[in-house]
Length: 264
Image 1 (cartoon, rainbow, N blue to C red):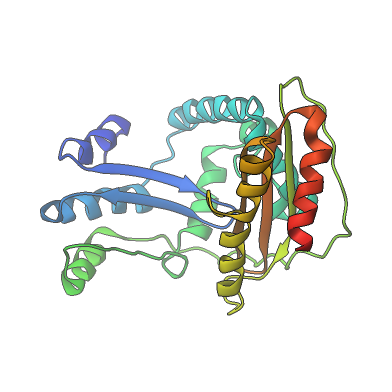
Image 2 (cartoon, rainbow, N blue to C red):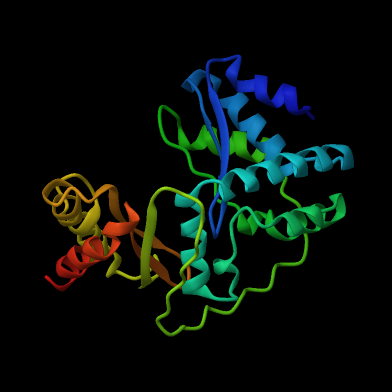
């Protein structure tokens, strides 16, 4: 019921914030407002999530914006190496594809393609609504019930779990100043109780300035400005990864220190 400008002004005019993001397994729409503006926030989110019009002219305009976003990622080696790592780990599974898609996949989108995806993916049994702050659960439930009307459509077919791939290396040459290294391995899904131990391990290994990798590679050896580890838990698996940026001539030395820390 709102155009793009009205959506942008809806919560910002109240001093609030509206945003969205996409990960490999979910898309999330977020709003943050004073508690007195909760009804407006729920109404706007319900409008976006359940009543998008997919107007052909707006779709074409947004496709142009996404193309520019893809090009900006291509110019960002830290982002690009992350997509390359995912492709190495997950292969031809959808987890191995870039979240933004490609120029070709974006060009293929039409209003009807998006509507079909909307009907299958935004069903009531696919949506999770979470809230925190100064609110009452009963009142929130009433607001959601009045503002959200998810579509009905055929449930999407679940994709098979990704198959295990042998260890492998990808080396890409780009016209950049640094060598960007990303190493990764499969981890456990988010329902696995071992994930808590994995979070502790990730924190010790590369989770901050006091971590082993930061102290060894940056503080003691002075080889890298950025070095860290991360862990992502997914439905059917997970990913533990290490990322660092070094001068090309010092890559082997940095990898040697990294190997020492992993062995230790």
